[in-house]
Image (tube, rainbow, N blue to C red; front, top):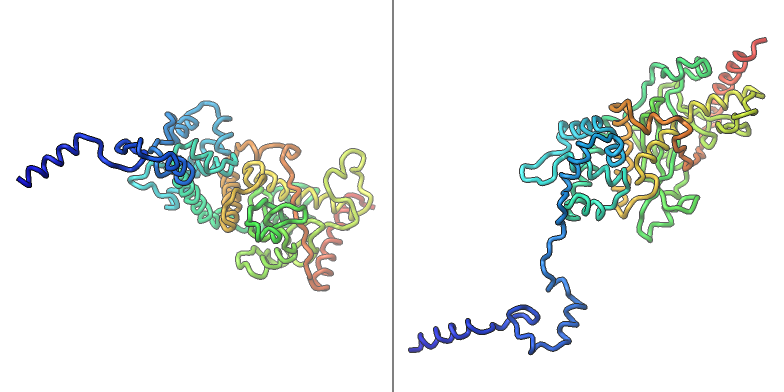
Amino acid sequence: MASSEVNAGIESNSGGESPGTPGTPGSNESDVPEEFYAFRDLICPELFRENVPRNTSALQGAGWVAEIMSTPHQGRFFDNIRMTKPCFYALVDALTSRGLLLQGQTSRVTSIEEVALFMQTVGMHKRHRDNMERFQHSLETINRRFHRVLSALCAMAPELITPPNFIESHPRVANNPDFYPFFKDCVGAMDGTLVPAWVPRVDQHRYRSRKGRLAQNVLAICDFEMNFTYVYAGWEGSAADARVLDNAVSQDPNFPFPPIGKYYLVDAGFANYQCFLAPYRGTRYHLPEWRGQGHRYRTPQDMFNHAHSRLRNVIERCFGVLKKRFPIIQWGMPSYLQHHQVDIVIACCTLHNFIRRFSNDDIIFNEPDEDTLIDMDSFYHRGHPTNSEIEAQRTIRDSIAMQMWADKHPN
């Protein structure tokens, strides 16, 4: 008899409304005070929010990538990926063939989509939330895939950012009578630039540059093919410029010291010593100063500075192309960790070299010099060379200047 009473009780209870959490379909809402709903909506709305799908677009990330890959309009692809289509395929193949990007068996994101996502971030200055909407993936997936490609490019950097040819003169020098034989021992150009940085408030005073912006100092060397041959990133914007170069020379075992007698071209802000050849100070130097009626040379130093400026301008063009292709380098980093911001600079320089080597028809590289953004964020070096080093390099510079003057003004 007791058993039937229990069963009856269960049956009668199943037919009515079961007690449940207030505000849910099974609760008696007439007995719930209004204060509960006010508290629920104010304090913890996510606990009672319905699970509504977010990424419901008909055009998923893979579909969007497939669409721009198949478009006959080359400009649309270049504007979104910042390189030509063959170069993009070569980049994906280079990363996957080296095992730097691995396609998982259960992964919903292909390597092509990963690299396209990365290029949208650095080449179109898209935030992760923008890419979450574009590629229809969760924010966690977007962030993880971005850093996966970032790590792969940094791992490939030593293969692409390599020292220049120290033995032979570059054809740009050897085939130009204005430069050869005077600059036959020149192996590249060196300069620095400021890259906007995001840092916590407590560290902002260390990263604030002389221009008042938060930035990191980036020292770089390039050859005359506009390939970066050395990149040293990560120093605070307020760091003394001599400290940046001195640290690179003394602490970085990968600094590409040229052989004795070879040198890099630097601007007048750097000391003229050892393997760095600077122009004369107090004499016009920048290229616009020679335009129009100002092209006539007044002194040997004047002639030397013009040739020096024309050759050294390659590093300014490198920085200009880099920042034009990758707005994240020009306009600022999102709130990445500081070591990730350094990695982004290295990755963009790696991509710069890859595109230079594998894409002869690249639009940005083939722009005329006057159409390329010339980087104006160079920093200045005040080193502490010895008197003998200064005197030795001064002798080399004076010898070049007098040879150039004698060649143009034979008596």
